[in-house]
Length: 498
Image (cartoon, rainbow, N blue to C red; front, side, top):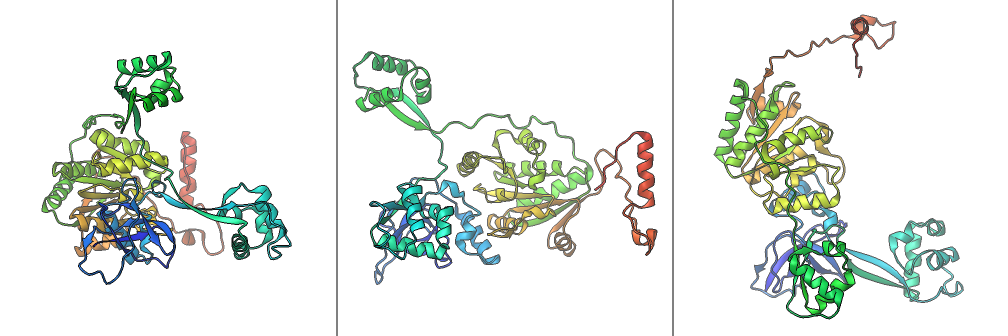
């Protein structure tokens, strides 16, 4: 017997551990999405292990129903990170897996209620409010979801959630309603072009003959272009059914943006060269290393990042660059696109679900070398990641404040331990934790104290208003600030107050 572990994709603390099923003859891998039995229903589940042979048959295992025709939800690295998050941040494994999967790309079970007859006599069901009966039979469609009923204003006037569930149960037992459970397709699927090719069978009709001639003249033409040429979908379907045409699906090529190396990079300064050499040595060791790049504002940390990524790519490894969402501007991402071309993927909140899905799949297929994005880009399914860079590593946005909660720098360190890579923390004002770790020698400290342009830093004055204003006076502006604003006004310059 071939056994496999799978975790039902349901939100319940009762199912926190994977269940063991009979894999049968299915070819399953970690991250596959399957349909599995649970109690009296079938549920969507994630495969968490490869099938294994078991010699004993003391326990009858329930079989996996089928492997669903969707891409893998996560890879082995994603599963290990989810287990790390679940253990360290005290959440269920199912909750942790939501960080490494795209929910809209996974099928789900849709529970519905179906009216089986006309509205029952209220005297027959005295426990069910008349207001609820009228809501179900007069305002809701024939097939409706339970949540649709629970959120309806009229239904909510008939009772709270617990009462409504009791009333629905009474209607089901009375056979006035029937429960219906079906597998719903994912909201986001892989986009494929539908291409038409000539078939080997004849078809009658002038328009059909014109369609076949059009396809012979343009073999592999997209179906959408045939429709734009004046041929209806019904005619195309008839030609396909008759065998006069054949149809195939093909993944469209990723749009070409630019070739890498179009950006003319400046020569590294001495401090930058020292930092780049240290990062290159850490990469060559093929062991986990943590490094803190402490550089003042404008010291050229981005150049160090690009050179570090180049070193990783030369070693045939990949890279992830995390930046705070507010800093993920087009100018930031274009620096990496100009350096590495089409092998860069940018993940941010402005992407549609389909764009995020396509980027996620391109990472899994090995078409991407560098991922630039906000916190969630850390879980991109890139194989063989050699370096993770956290720019502005002190920024609080690297902390996820909703379930599953996690600190991106901590999870990034765990990913690099798993993949024997390096974690580079870049900041002008590093956190106390990372700076103390560097002082103790737990991570290497790389410093950039000068700007490549030799431009001096602005003067900073700290004013203690308690001493300047005294205990009996109140105010928010110090004398030096008022004087500085007056000078700027006289010069016709502008000032910014935070």
